[in-house]
Structure formats: structure tokens, C-alpha cells
Amino acid sequence: MLRRQGGRKTDELRPIRIEPHYLDFAPGSALVTWGRTRVLCAATVQEQAPPFRQHTGGGWVTAEYAMLPPATHTRQSREGPGARPRGRSQEIQRLIGRSLRAVVDLEALGERTVVLDCDVLQADGGTRAAAISGAFVALCLALEPLRRREVLEVLPVTHQVAAVSLGVVEGELLLDLDYDEDSRAEVDANFVATGRGDLVEVQASAEAGPFPPALLPEMLALALTGIGRLALLQQEVLSPWLPVPW
Image (cartoon, rainbow, N blue to C red; front, side, top):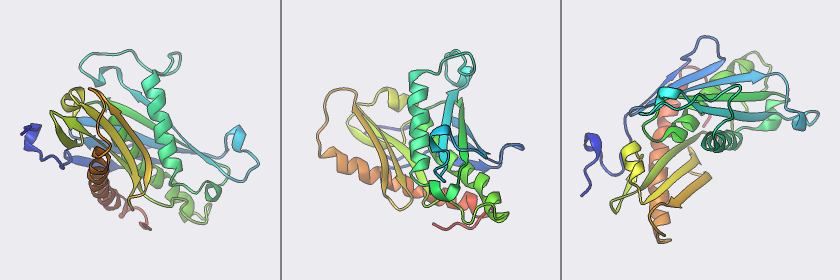
């Protein structure tokens, strides 16, 4: 039987903490500490929709994602102005944007843009899951003041959304892979779902040869177990700051 770091069970998440309003100047922010992974999420509300959404009455939610140069064991070049984002970063920021748009009523948002900045301070696996789960908290914190001031009639968030990673390592299906497990995974997957268990996105790939279709239901059940726990944590973090309608 595979022995996990810290003695974790196969269906156990690493210790996770979400610190709301971590930044003083961002309308909404959250620092996610997920095992040794740390991701800082910030939400900014712009009073203008992107060009392709202007004059439609609806808004947009988008994201940017980057890793700080010393976030991993080997320093990497900085991403940002003057530097083209890496393909992996582009893929993840699009995933974050799609995941958050799935639970935002863009018409109720009005002609506004919410930009979610997700910066990885330290990476030890699961950075996209941490970014999505933390970005949801930052988004709600940024929009709630607009509802209180009656700029928005309602909080335009229809459901919670969170994400987890999982995979097969040495023949065992494991929830929430750290970097060491992820680097040895025979199957690697990320699941994004609402707090009610409705799927938003599924990413799964064979890293060491094809895997049987019968594995998919097991992966789904394990992922939804983890996402349910994350939804409870999000509610606990948000409840002092806004009515939790989910």
C-alpha cells in the first residue's frame, strides 16, 4: 500500500486554509494555503464590459495566472509585461475564467468586468485547484459591497465552484496530489464542480498508457467528495462577510 506524506489517506485532502481580504487594496482577495502550495487570489471590478460584451447588458469574468520565479525548486523566468505567458499559464487562466463564469449570472452583473489575478507564491501540486477555489472567495468578496450599496440588485453568483486534483499513483487512486505524487502519476486529472456536485470541467490524461473507462466513475466520486469538503470551507470563510445563499 502506498504511503503518503503526512500519513494521508487515499481520500484525504491536504490541510487547507483560506484567508479572506488578505490584501488591503483589492476589493476582494484570498490567500489559499493548500499543503505547501500557496496561491494569492485577487478580484478587481471594472465598470466596463470588454468590447465583445458592450451594449449587451451583460458583463464578463476573466482571469490571469502566473507563478513567481522562485515558486518552484528551480527558478523560472518571470511572467508579466514584456514577457509572453507560458502555454501552461494561458491554459490555466482560461480554465479559471471558464470555471467562474459558470457560476456567475453575467446579465445580473451588468456591463462590468471582474478580473481575477491568481499568483502562485509557492507550488507543490494542485495550483489550478487552489486558484479556482480561492478565486471564488475573492470574487464574492469583491461583489458583495456592490450589492450592499444597491449598485447590484442581487449578488450575481448562482452557485459555489471549487476544484480538486486526483490521480493514480503506483496503482492507487489518490485525492489531491502533491508535486511528488503528481510527477509519478500514471493517470492525472482535475475536476471542477459546483457545491451541489454539478460538473463544470473535467480534465483527465493518461501519463503511462491508457486507463480503463471503469475508472472514471471512481474518479468522479472521489473528486466530488473533495469538492464537497471545499464547499463547506468556502462557506465557513465567506459567512462572516456576506449572506451565503447556496
